[in-house]
Image (tube, rainbow, N blue to C red; front, side, top):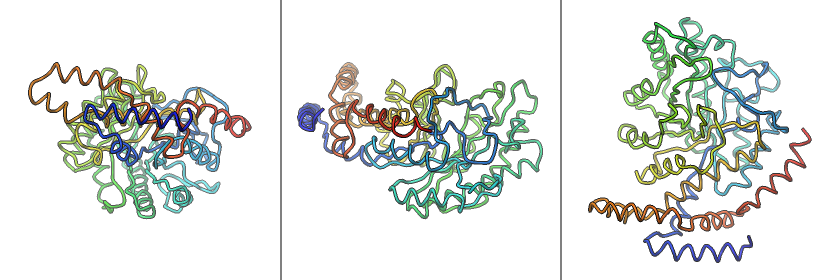
Length: 420
């Protein structure tokens, strides 16, 4: 599409949305102020940069072997930079602890320091990105039997407690240097493949570990703690210590942000319906947006019904400043940069559609019991020209609009990733 065609389509869209009381120009400003956190692990299949055999544990699987995955920090950052070129707006990068810049040294998880992530901070400053962070409680000899913060051995629990405390300090330093609150997320793979008779004890161990972790008080202006549940994982099918009920209870009691991952629930559960409930009891929540197919398979996010519902719940709850959105998937079967761009653009499109809803009129219909009118307007909104608005937003930000980005990624593959 030419710039003239994009502008013409946008002008028509502005006029059409005006008929249902939506200010499109205001919506453009809103979408531009909604950062999405890109997960660094899509570019290298969750390998990280520790000196290990690279084997994944904790129920995590990156399927496929598409050529060109990032093999070093420089290649990983170059791939993220390329993805960012094709995504409008200013966004964040989410890093796991085992992606540190260790300089070839063997640094165990309970020894990591802010200095091991200074090059990430410097890169983020240069690129005008902000950073988020995660403790890495998997793919390690001390997690090999399936337990970390809930481990029966106090010495192993202490190792992971120290790791998470150090991660929180790193996140705090990231937020301080970059002038933006760093979201630090805690997820553990702890659980059992078969029936356990010690459910309560493992959860008591986890609670004790978390209590010790949070004894170190961070600066709320620099970082925010998040705790993330999961229903099960490969190898821990029968019992997960950090269930949704556990973390929801712990989070509400201790005012710790809860992370909802779209793939971490039963196949028939959806996180869009959980957002409004948590917002009543917590000041902020974190979302990990993924696409599960039959299980927590971490497929690339696409513009499907649940993604739209998630965005609608955020907007309809007037919670744009209280809900943090990050992506969490890893597809090694397709072009990895393409997977980034498809997922982030889909998430932006869902948020844009939600922002373009005639919410005032819809609320009026609902308050008056005009349920037919509410249904009809919701249906008409689905076919409004939101795509023209998104293309305009891309063009305004100097980003390729429409499907033309496909050829751009193909060229990067030809010039860069195919030669790895």
